[in-house]
Image (cartoon, rainbow, N blue to C red; front, side, top):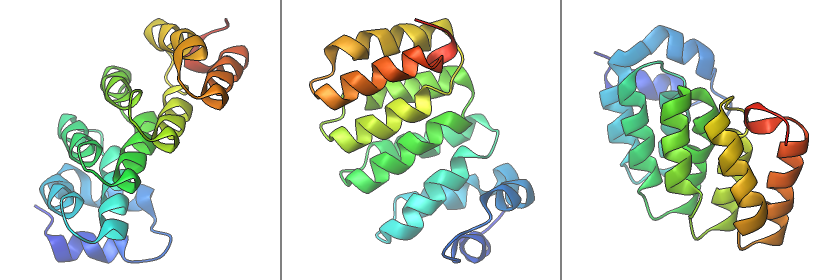
Length: 155
């Protein structure tokens, strides 16, 4: 199991090598990452969130859910950014939780990340958001993502 100091070593640089950290630490780091995600250091917590998203393990989704549940928009943005790295079903479920976030910035990141998922269900979600998001610029973004083939298909 990777401990917090070991994980911090990977996350301390301004620009961590997330791919190498995920390969090296693997699922053994998820308990430490979850502790960091719940911590007071938001910069470290947001980096821990993104690293967790790169670890191909079901518990990675649990880690992102912890970030999604925090009150700070930065943490919800970090969870949203990780959607693109999750298995489609997990990414779609996290997107469902974030698509109604009160912060438009969180919704924007979630929308952009989820558009990389290739499924008919995601295409339906994009279509719905292109007409229903309360922010006009996010409705336009959803429409643009549909036109560019985001969400797994053409409009």
